[in-house]
Image 1: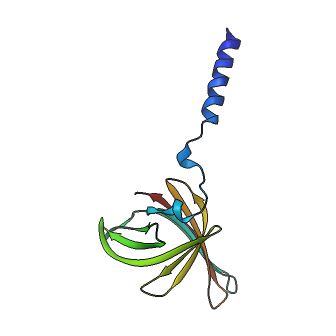
Image 2 (image 1 turned 120 degrees about the horizontal axis):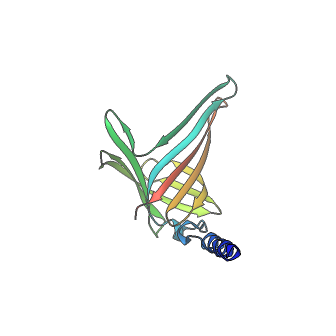
Image 3 (image 1 turned 90 degrees about the vertical axis):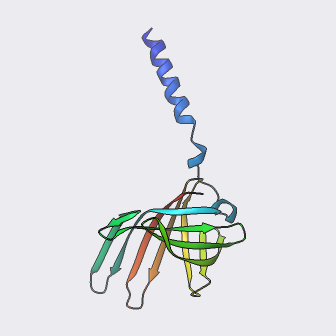
Length: 155
């Protein structure tokens, strides 16, 4: 009887472990898979200036709540290679900007149509419900910043 209970428990454990949630499987980094609205949930990173030995780190959950209220932002990607970046304050839109985007390999390039700026992100994770972007920026004085931002799909 002990062997039967052990075998039944082992079978159940293997069955549950083998059944992965399709929602959390990594998807190919393509325009078709990124279409939707993504809301920030977490950002972490650091800024470093090795010349002076300065380093600053951060880790923040969103919506970010402070004495003034709470804020977050979203990216909406459409199937035409365009989208909208929207900032929210206390649940209401406080501004939005149009952009165009493309994906090559795991690199997401966003071109701001209003300002003419270009941002590049490495797609570290893309599932039906989660998008994780990594960016590294260099500055004039030898300092740099690395940041990993996690989004959840809301539409």
